[in-house]
Image (cartoon, rainbow, N blue to C red; front, side, top):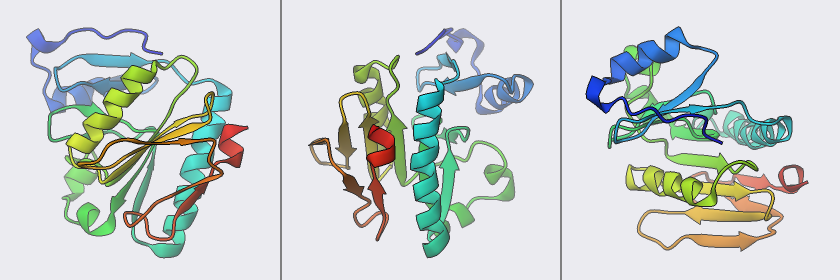
Amino acid sequence: MTVATPDLRPFAITDEKFWELCVANPEMRLERTAEGKVIIMPPVAADTGARNSEVTGQLWLWNRKTGLGKVFDSSAGFVLPNGAIRSPDSAWVRQERWDALTRQEQSHFPPLSPDFVVELRSRSDKLADARNKMLEYIENGARLGWLIDPKEQRVYIYRPNQAVEVLDDPETVSGETVLPGFTLELGGIFT
């Protein structure tokens, strides 16, 4: 659920000014669209937070074993090539891409799209908005994305240059070649 989307375009909010806004308001979860709108998002309900932890936890365990990249939770923001600053519910970046960033870039909102993103639809999220966000990630360089809808028990799989694949009530979903050997178990997410 989005509480407010003030239009800050007339103020030409730069990446640095947005960073300062976020640092000055750590209690707020903020994103910026490519059009310059700042989105203020409320905290998620406890059940959604638990589901987010389940997704990120499974991804983290896989990454700890493989050492192939960096895992991020929903508090990390990324500057996409289109200028949006987005915070997926869970994300992963290949190690070589992360290592190519400067220390300054790593300690702010890194200027890259994650290789893999997950958005977990909460009860208050509009499906159309979540789908548009997933398309934005893919159009800006993500190689794989999952929109997980616990209410409908569906997973929408996004890949570059492919139609969205919809899985109804799957037990697992594969990380394919982007996350080799990773399989997300959905039991704790759909229940």
